[in-house]
Image 1 (cartoon, rainbow over the protein chains, first blue to last red):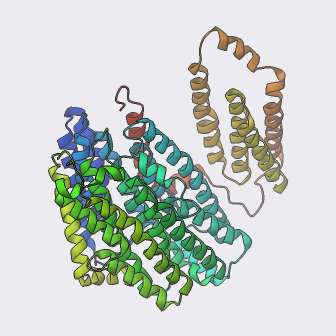
Image 2 (cartoon, rainbow over the protein chains, first blue to last red):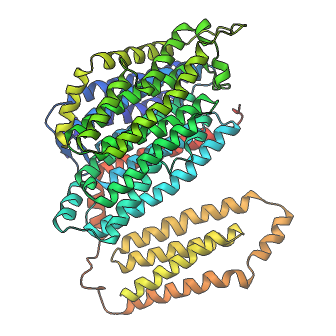
Length: 475
Length: 165
């Protein structure tokens, strides 16, 4: 390791050191505002260094991490997303006394884990990044320590532990077959000697199981609604976006390298998972009255859509995945953002009935919520539309007709429950809701998200150019 | 040497099955110790004596002792004293003892039978481990330290008293 390697690792070092700075500051001075400001400035600084490094020469660092444009793009995305989530959490945490240092430290460590996953090119960093993410999330999910939060935390702990053991066993089998844990070496060994042995396939399958749990794909999705419901709203947003995005970025890198799409059996497995996720997610969301659960099921379906792009090949697939993930990040953080802004830490506003007539008291919030839901449904002028457009064009390019068909059918089904929420927002109710003061940081965050949603929906070419640089490093 | 590997793997699998089927947590722990010891023997046979020693010292030693302490401290009182006396009936310790006996005889055989194990195996010395931990895998060590920090802070928060809603 030399000086230039250290410069490549700067974003990771900044995040780690700010986690430790918060810890040290709390020895002397415990104040919620200070902790939040430190977390936000750490994320901002890391985001700026990531942006500064983007486009520089791809470097390989210390055997475990590859900091290339692909990794930097996703790291930037995760830092920006966590920045929005931290801004939202500030107002949310303020409703409960305490200095909440653990919340911000764990959030920083979780995003560090996802950044490691995005840059990982080795099983060791894969596993370490995943565990950093999961272990911080156990505590964050159970952060409120009520009955439901504890249930959610324990559910996540047990199932994540189980999925990690599947993952480890898969890695062990792949290592036994190829003799290496480096992704590119695994790729060259398995393509050179045509390793198609039973042990190798089972290893890859077990890795799919482990990653599928984190991505909440059917049939590994059982935990999702309960965990989303039990955890604080900003943490639900984090689980839905950064945690899933990090694992997706990693498996996209790994499976593109070993060219898993070319293997008919795995192609079939992924097709079944994708179709099952789309249908299960959307059908279960139809009659939910808890908005957090609706978003949980809808996120299962969205990951199913994302697999369409994953299964198509070529640079277009990576462009589609990156764009769709960005749009999905903005949309789901925005939707959870509205819930967060309206909730208190001890009492969340999560039922559909509590949102009836929101437009009369909070026109801005209901406007943002409507825009987010329309983006989920893929209505033009929103980022969700362009994202879906890319998914379909990537799928058509590789002639994945079954997947395209179920994508279209499911988009139609999903419009029902999105419109059901929008209708409730604009319903005329006899007695007005009590107007509650909105936290400033959270309102700024969701307004910014709304602005980005519209910008990407109307003028996406800037982001697409950025993504094409990203795709070139991997393709 | 293959036979030794298979025997200790069988011991590991058998004792782990016993761990998850025991109703009494102290008995489960006894089997867990055997399971960890058999993993240590596997490491030794595969040519990693240092890791084998670490496995014994850290897992079977420190962590298990901690487990036993916590479980025994959870329910003190005269009733549990009576229970404790019942814990160590021969029927209970016979199983783990037999499995450990197999392991130790394996170990003695491996130590006395001539020289380095199979020719294909390369013995990994403590120096090799240190060099790779602080050379190519330095970032892994750093990340693991942050991982432990996350665990520490998470436990600190969840175990805090009196902030429940």
